[in-house]
Image (cartoon, rainbow, N blue to C red; front, side, top):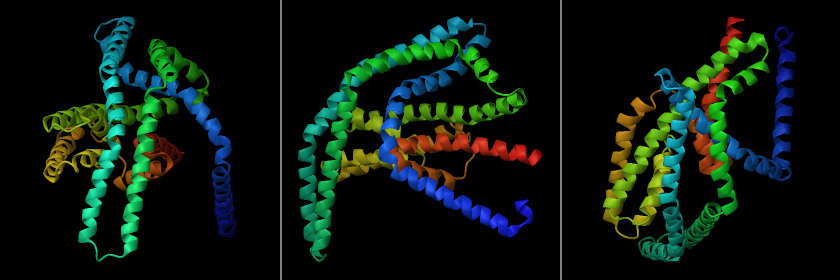
Length: 355
């Protein structure tokens, strides 16, 4: 009816826009109220979300092993032991080193800040023609950066050393993953019973589309990030750069973020090497650039592929939005969430077109 009456159609969208704006405004204003609720739910559901992700990544491997004649129970047990055995060993070897390097960096931070202050003071001599307000602003930026980095390192140490939380993660997640893998088919049947019969085919096709795009993207990105972290570790170790492990892990994790990830990951390495030597900074930049060239031209096209067929403008937009909402974590999650939304919207549009 609204299509036949353009004024009513226009009024409908105006009212919808006003109510949407009011809803968003109320969400922003009431954020302190429900922030505690979301924080509680996040900490409660986080082990389940991590377990679902691990099971989702491991299950296709189990299926392939089962197709090649290995009993499913044996395949689950083998992959389970290999994954958590390997993860446990890496955690046992890497975790103490990461804590040690973060703590050492926290102790050495005043000396690093002092080096940058000396650099800024030398810069003042070359920029004496600039207004005094510019120099004051530069001092303010250094102080803000010092405070931010100190708080960040303190939070990292605290989060890594929360014994109770670590015990929960170490004990609960392996158990949950085992049951998710073991009862994967039963869970699918249980979920299917809650979906009306006429939507079974449509839901199955939708889940397949999401799995084809998102699953290959996540698995491919994990492999690429392991390569970037390993190559960065080798580069930093050869150059004898301090905090090698911490910097290479940062390079690997941030590489998940398209476009901005390599830049974000390179900043800590440049910040650490800048006080040492300008020549060393150039060598580090050249090495990081070479790693990214190998990643962008050889690894990603074959391992990740074009599993997410989304325009770069949309990806950049959601990356900026994710960064505003939740920093680096928001940027990491932005593209997978966009991929799922894109598949769902494409499916909905396709169904409507057919109808």
